[in-house]
Length: 455
Image 1 (tube, rainbow, N blue to C red):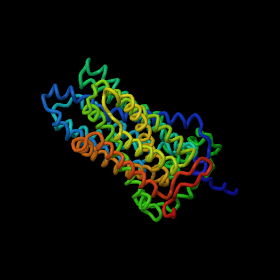
Image 2 (image 1 turned 135 degrees about the vertical axis):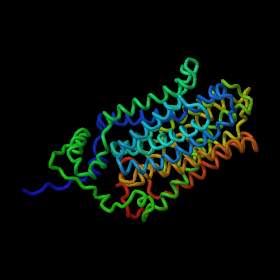
Image 3 (image 1 turned 120 degrees about the horizontal axis):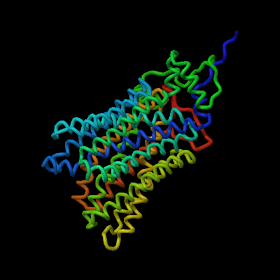
Image 4 (image 1 turned 60 degrees about the vertical axis):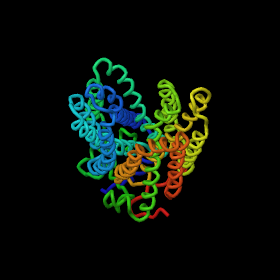
């Protein structure tokens, strides 16, 4: 009997339809991002209670926050590489369980030293969930819907921050910081255990292991593909595969990788300068605490809308037009904020509207970076590529701790926004240098395999 011809697994997954099962997996990945955002925000909410109970200054917690960010940066790089090696499912579940268990343990901690190392360990899990979650979404989403799916999933990171605020509102008065850490850790642990029962492994990862052939067949059927037990598969684009790290710096990818890293660095530098220092900037201009909270909420709402809209625009217009467009918008928006009369009596509504618009563009740029990173590399190096780029970006996030305070001290609100505009402008230039861009809808191209030239 003549053997059946091998089926192109990549083509099946990239060009097939997006059914209810696959959309349900997007929901699960979005929940992972939500608890990721929750765990990332919990320390900031607990700080006032910790300062009061332990009798230490706010400055004493700076190393705790800083080492937590270092943990996130390290986790994105290591978690991405592990995800490519052991599979998206294990990488994502392991990351969620890690930061969940460590956050629960933080409820019983006493002293700055133990808390510092627990936040570093939590950061490893928080960082590791990002590239594995993004890669997981890519693996189960057809190319035409992938940009929107990644943006829709990652917008749940700030939603998780909102959830942290809601939990803190009720938990802190009743159970103190211990209760906040406990609840914020139990939720991801419960989700991780649910993932053990519900989350499948990536079809492309299963295809690399002949022993998992039967699991692959069942999974493809659930994704709507008519295959039988005798079906054979080939990943022609990955036949020349080397190591994931080599794929980042192979012929045709090296220049794009470096440009992506620069774009990511300055994108997150601008994002975190806004996230961390907008409240301080507004209070320095004379706004009340309530007005400051409203301003930050306006910025975050704009960011959530911009993140999803950016993904939709990438799918319709391609990344070169969409990502460069939101980067240009973020630059012009920051310059406009630097010129506006930001003061509490006459300029509040104008500043509020400008913060919403700036949040829209910054959120679109942030999610656009992750979407572009997920597209640039072949499947076997996807989590490594996203993780490495995100890790470089997190260095920019750490640097924002200094750029924000220095710009406000030296040049006030105008200088602060000029720093943000400069960072987004550099991100614009670096993104424009990336040669391999996501095509517009209807002009699909194959993902780059190792060794191909993308000139």
